[in-house]
Amino acid sequence: MIWFLLVWLALVLIRPQEWPQYADLGIPILPITMAATLVAWALGRDRHPFNQPTYLLFPVFIVIGCFTMVVSGWAGGAVDRFLNFLPSLIAMVLVAQASQSPRNLTRIMWVVCLAALVLTVHGIEQVHMGAGWTGMPTVQDGRIQYVGIFSDPNDMAMLLVIGLPMAMLLSGRGGWLGLRRLFWWALGLALVYGVYLTDSRGAFLAVMAMGGVWIWLKRGVLVAGILGTAGMAVLMMLPTRMQELDAGESSAYGRIETWYDGIQMFIEHPLFGVGVGNFTEHSWLTAHNSFVLVLAETGIFGYTVWLAMVVYCFLMPIMLLRLPADLGNEEYQPLWTQERRVAMTLLIAQVGFYACAFFLSRSYVILLYILLGMVTGWYAGASQRWAGLPAFRVQSDWFKWCVVSVLSIIGLWLVIKVLFVLAGS
Image (cartoon, rainbow, N blue to C red):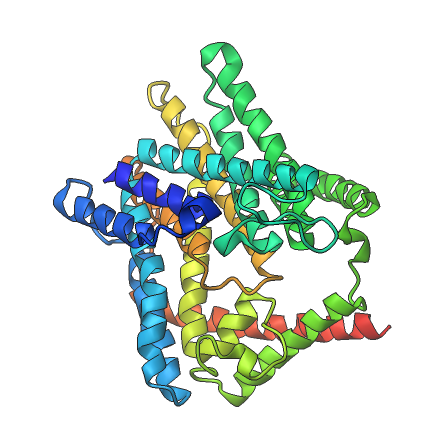
């Protein structure tokens, strides 16, 4: 199954089926490859118990998302939304099932990193030639982009951001007289350069956040704060759109307004929101915030389920990292050290993704659910390999998630109020 999955993942991320030379073939290569992967999984030996909360919460969220269409007055839209969500659900399940094996998880990271490199090379060609081999030109004064789901520089940057910590993990494997480490370091630097070429302010902040969290966990909050301040100062001096980062700047102010619109939609439709995909029916722009988007479109029910799914996966690597670094057992210590490195990588990748997603409407993109699948599968496998990891159970945590959901909504509202004040000052 893993080889079918890797091919499908490469097609999703590199998207050669959308290059001009292949776009007219008319072959639905993605559905065919996904179906082949699903069949191979069903007939193979890679099936594992669905014992992590993500397996339950994502289908429940999809059901709620479909029901929001019925409540909003378009019952036929429920079928449409289900079909839109179905590939992400299948992808999350298949990636999670494969990722229980450390070897398969490494292979998936390979594909993510190499795909991010392909997009970066394409972007470099855009900068020098005016357009890449896909025919896509640069946009907005030279920002690079790709095709399909990465045709927005911000979306492209999100893939590069989550690929960066994975490249750093892979660089620690050594071998080939040091050439393997050199290759992954070079790839990591290329991804950083690719982020720079996207000129995505959210991605710049995401890289800063990833570095800050890594330093915090390794060296403490004081060192992270000092270096983070210095890094932000340097970043603000670079000739990028970060120099325009101001709450009163027109683009930033427009985003704050849409966040406010989203909160108003929630207040008017608190239970099931305005319906998945209907945000722009009530506002002149999309939400530009993945959390506000889910809250506005699916109400308190959908938001609570989605938030629980996201935070569970965020907590999974944290739970492992809270265990002692030293096992006191020389035989298993190298394996435990590697497990902790994987946990750190998945945690940092999620920090980067959500830092980007806080400024973008990317609540439903397949890249998110591929990442959640990797985390879910890894934690399920780690729970079998190591004793002491807690088991997450939605049934016993539901009230906690209701409280967390309400508190986070209050937090969003306060952030928006503060930003409005800063924008007016």
